[in-house]
Length: 127
Image (cartoon, rainbow, N blue to C red; front, side):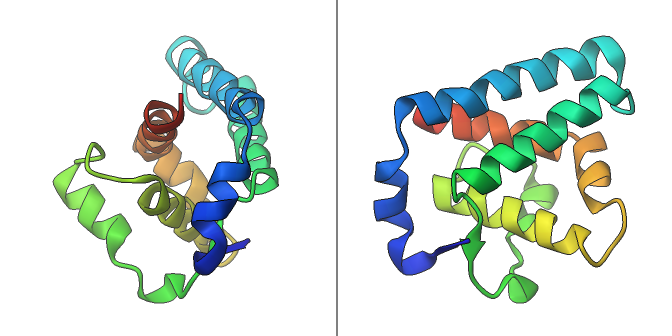
C-alpha cells in the first residue's frame, strides 16, 4: 500500500507501459462481462488479474478506510466523472480491504458495475 504522503510522487513513477497493462485488462474485462456475463470464469479471472495489477502498481492507499464515506457517496450519486485518481484508488482500497472481512464484496461491486466504472475512470485519467 502506498502512503497518502507519497501517493502523488508514486503516481508519477508509474510508466505508460505499466498503466497500459492495466488498461488492456480493463478493455478485456468489459468485453468479457458483455459477452460471457459477470459470473463467467473468464470474467472472474480477468477481474482478479486486474486486482493483482492494481496491487502491483501500488494503487492501494494507506489510510483509515473504515471511516471512508466516499464509496457510499459515489454509489448514491452514480457520478464517477468528478473522481480524481486518489479518490478512485481510495474506493478500490476500501472494496479490496472490505472483501477480506465480508465475503463476496469484490464480486458484489463488480456485478453492480462499480469496478468497471472505477477502472474506466482511471483509464480516462491516465491514458
